[in-house]
Amino acid sequence: MFAKTLSRGLIIAAAFVAMNSMADTFPAAKISEMMAFKTMDKNKDGMVSKAEFLEMAGKTYDMYAKEMGAKGGKIDAAQLEKLRTMMFMQ
Image 1 (cartoon, helix red, strand yellow):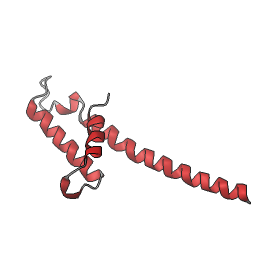
Image 2 (cartoon, helix red, strand yellow):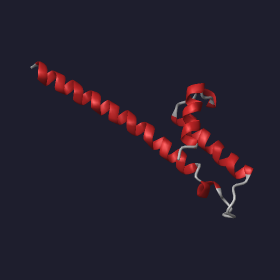
Image 3 (cartoon, rainbow, N blue to C red):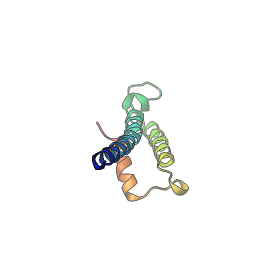
Image 4 (cartoon, rainbow, N blue to C red):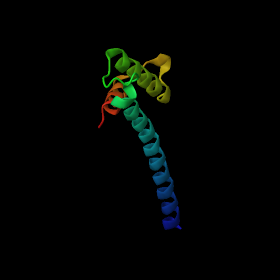
């Protein structure tokens, strides 16, 4: 009986961990894709202008803030660090 209850508990815990991992992975992959050179180079001239970079950085921030449920479009220091890491991950 105890082993059966323990097994169910472990399965439920593993499911929650997996769901949390998937939630964190999708935005990071999307943000990394958005900050890729080929995505930012809107006019396809082989260079990224300040305007192109800032446009994509703004879209990235907005998407992330919405995903995190930011109040008033603001994020805290920990959220900013996570966003910065996702934006510039290789």
